[in-house]
Amino acid sequence: MFNKQTLRDFDLKGKKVLLRVDFNVPLNSNLQITNDKRIRETLPTLNYLIEQGAKIIIVSHLGRPEGKVKPEFSLKPVAERLRELLKRPVILTGDVAGPETFKFVRAMKDGDIVMMENVRFDPGEEENDTEFAKKLASLADIYCNDAFGTMHRAHASTTKVAEFLPSCAGLLVEKELEVLGSALENPKRPFVVIVGGAKVKDKIGLISRLIEVADVVMIGGAMAYTFLRAQGNNVGKSIVEKDKLQLARLLIEKAEKQNVKFVLPVDHVVTGEFNFSAESVITSTKKFPRTGIGMDIGPKTIKLFTHYISRAKTIFWNGPLGVSEFQKFAKGTNEVAMAIANSKAYTIVGGGDSAKSIEQLNLQNKINHVSTGGGAALKLIEGVPLPGLQAISEKL
Ligand code: AMP
Image 1 (cartoon, helix red, strand yellow):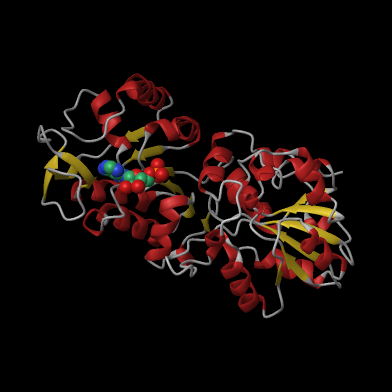
Image 2 (image 1 turned 180 degrees about the vertical axis):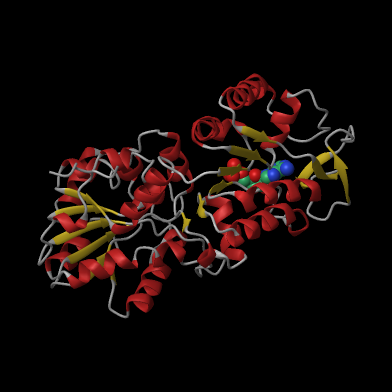
């Protein structure tokens, strides 16, 4: 259960709030924002702070400038979009907790917003440096973390800074923790889980944990080939993590022991090369060509997956079921996304590429919760402590 202090536990009038957000939005080559979801998701917190008369000092990272000032990672486009969305001034300072930031912060009135430049321009950020964290803290009275997508990182502005200020979670973080934490504690059944993506290695803990709570676990994407191979199937030249075969077997056994249905693809869209326009054929798992590469789940698998989805009362989905960046091999992912959106179950999509697919298909309003955090969401479900969350004070 959620036992951390939240913004509602503080009297915010006239207080300087150091607000860590995750405005790490995608930019095109002209440095224009191609998806502003991460900015829009923090509007409830920002509006709440404005209504309460706080002075808001925004801290965010953007991309990976690796501790150096790189103009292409400037938060300029973000500040501009935020002004449009809030319809109020947002001052972007030219430094990271430097003299210019301090100057603007000193002049703030209640409800004002000052945003410092990309916090990752300072090497102290990713080093979780104490002196840098102290400098950030000295700007404000209260620290609020609303950067759910970054909570699995122990950085100065997500973790260390909380040692030097009273701290709390923002409204977005609160929502994420409530949904991801509690939905899995007592799910309505059948609870159906779909996990795809590139590597078993990245999702072992997640799958293992989900086997403990779900009724059906369905696997697609490249990782399915490691499981299929572990069962003794030929999967041609599809990606197989040879060092994870034993582990894949153990997960299948665990599912059997727990009476959880573990569903693997029964057919595939197979090509001779890894290419966006490669010729493809559909084959069953049994007849997988010796030199073929599995690029997507086949029509029978889509039918099988959507059958379980249609009977579910709770659904959790993470990871594409094929190479969904290539239009030709996105069918499995898209069909499953649509089936989830059309189901009457309580539906949760765990960030990353699956969240992107939901947005591209414009299905976000038909999903109960699309998480803003890929890695953070998966770690939370897995039960791995998030440093950013641990750092926030517990409720008094
Ligand atoms: P993840 O970050 O683990 O969710 O993995 C996402 C990546 O998995 C995407 O880049 C997909 O292209 C990739 N992927 C999914 N299915 C396949 C496949 N059959 N073969 C190769 N890569 C795949």
